[in-house]
Image (cartoon, rainbow, N blue to C red):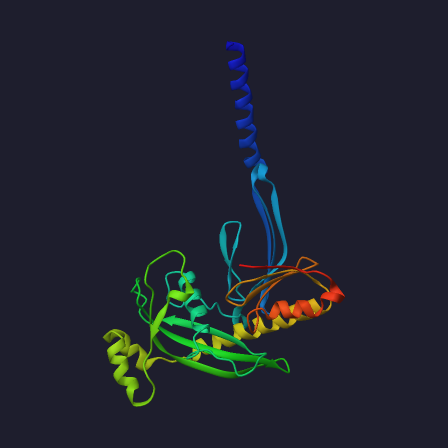
Length: 292
């Protein structure tokens, strides 16, 4: 009996030792990160090995200039210098999740974002006017634009800009876009009066002095790359080069090509990507599709 127990302890010890060594020798992460400022994106290869659980490999993943990606557990900025598409997040916010969700929310609000053309793309970005305030309600400046690309140049179809008080019922790690609410000043002679009612005094001065040019420039750079990527995805579908597509409810599309390239874009309207894929189904066969 004692011999059996000793053997069991030895076996368990060997297994733990093997597990430890597997993380020491097999664990690790290899990466290759290249910036293509003239193309508006960075591209990386990533091989992440996690002990006995094996390795995951990602090839030719593209990230927009100005965006932040997580590589090997570290945040890496795709810095393209003066030609980069600016990051649409972290405009005086404590984290990019809040800002991105609020920006996506305003894309659904017809006062700020609307469509004049079926093929146009809508984008929104915001700036926190009171960054020292961590809890809702928050006070932000919103800019939303409707864009198309003609003759390889970005064209603004419509746009809207202004200060907003935005509220959310609960502080949670996950934000439900349907639970946001906002209050914005009316136009015309009521504008100044509403500013004084809706916003605290220190924010009022920022509103009257606010210059929206930087927000517009930032959004236009992002719009050009995103729409260009959308056109590339459509071309890839037509040429039977796409292996899979993932769609989010914020109109964001991630397309993986058969050569392992991955491109991120925003579709003009919800489910446009599925209409494009179905149009070439007889020619190209099935493409893996998913939503989240």
